[in-house]
Image (cartoon, rainbow, N blue to C red; front, top):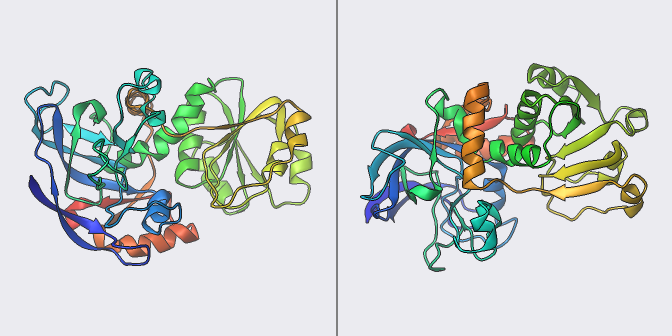
Length: 347
């Protein structure tokens, strides 16, 4: 075992404190990564505060991890010491179910080992995430980072990037499609960049007028202020797809009116309380509501390579580790442009 340190919470209301713990030494198929940067996802807040239930304490959050390979096992083929490497939202899965065999490990039917707040496949050992100095992961679940990408701006791609890339690919969204992105935060800004790069005509839907300029700077072709009187009636039957990344309560039925016949709303955001759904909104235009999680390892690597080819990275604010409490408060207020990334050399 290798002693390391991170920042952890010890219950749903405690502040972050320095936490010393052990990582396993690399096995024959493992990659040890010195963590250089870790993105801060809103799900970190939900889980540290036990807002989704089933939180395991002490908890070291973080599932947007990039760094340098420091040690490798004897059977490792993809990596050498000194390579840039990344880890996303999960670090293992059952490997034998139908989903795993289809490279859809995120939908593992037996047990996906989340990067933190989870248990290893032994169902006993807790996982600790990227708010730490190093991590050890099987090379099969470790990602290569293209050299052209700037590491701090890569970190959010491991969650926000793949969460938006996966449905865009699944639904084959591209040229000829008119796509709306609901919400312009960590996920939303990546959805805009990716959809535009794929050739779609992109509109940002927002309740905040001040986001119009930012939407256009990201490449969006149009902006609709949904709080403006008549906004929904004026834009009815307009979109082939709506990428819904909103995690706050909202009237889903109103937004469904914006879809064309056979239009699809892809839901990525998860409000704490269930939303009410008027079936007539679906029946009237054969509309669909679909969900999407992240991506499997194969698709996540594809996303990183795609982003390198098209020079797409997250817009980030780099922070020291001891700023994490303030960062959480700012995230709750929506005061981040668009993702916090922790510099792990700061503790």
